[in-house]
Picture 1 (cartoon, rainbow, N blue to C red):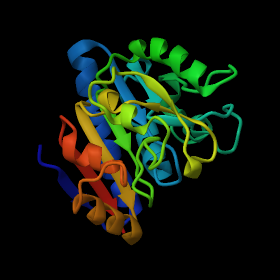
Picture 2 (cartoon, rainbow, N blue to C red):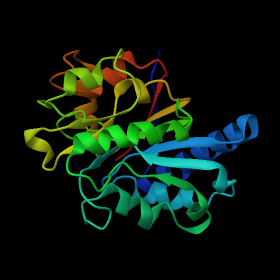
Picture 3 (cartoon, helix red, strand yellow):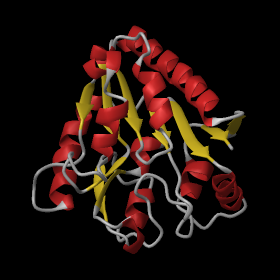
Picture 4 (cartoon, one colour):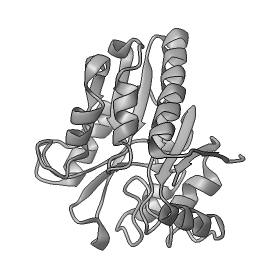
Length: 232
């Protein structure tokens, strides 16, 4: 598949354009099958996009929203991606969407992963839209270099679902959808901003060692073309 680059003058212009594209894809999915599914990423980068998308005039009651990955922390923790989504996306009309959290109040991330994998079937995989981010270390979702389950998570033969991931650079234990859950989304987006992230992307595109930079799995092996949205 050939990946596509979409460059914008600034983050606000990117947010508006990406929100319009995602809203159109979700509306189309609802028209075709009655429901739509959206998996989003955390971090500071998507906040403006979330706010722009939250006002889209679509049938949000028919949209399942979940996270590409999550820290194994409760939803009121400042580092929770769930909290970020609650405050920026699940507001305005989008407050009516059906949210599927990854964190579960159990003892371990492994237990939570098993529970969420069973719940994820409600999100009608494959996802209609997946929005990925990328760290300066080349990670995406919670596919971290050095992650204890990285090889399994990136294996296309690993079933769709959620896995636990532990890595020295990740801080908390993580929960992440597997590569096979994400790579065939109808709309697969990599949303990055800043010159530093562009440098990381160029380095990723220049090599093929997925253990070094796991984003390469998405860029090189995803079934769906990656739509790269970037602003300086």
